[in-house]
Length: 134
Image (cartoon, rainbow, N blue to C red):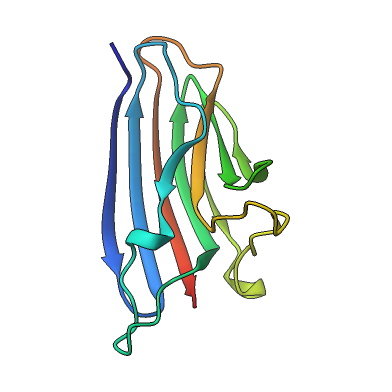
């Protein structure tokens, strides 16, 4: 069996994408699971494709487990770590969002999640506000 997960694109506009992610664990957890696939986000009207995002805000609530938010690359890079048994809003909009600092080799622009310390019945709810890059 696998964790019960959802990933919902709430907004996918020209400048902003908002992604809502949930997980109810059966104790198997997630490991580098893509939550924001930039190639699946809408393009500009002229056809220019989204190549990456900056994380402007993270709203989260974790019960029993933590979540590592990763920039996908040949060697993934931690963008943020959300602690277990904690809820908060992390707002990076004053600095125009967190940039993807993964090395250029194998960098996809995608965002992935890995759960930490998960056990059966643990949950997370995460909303990512992203500024799209072209």
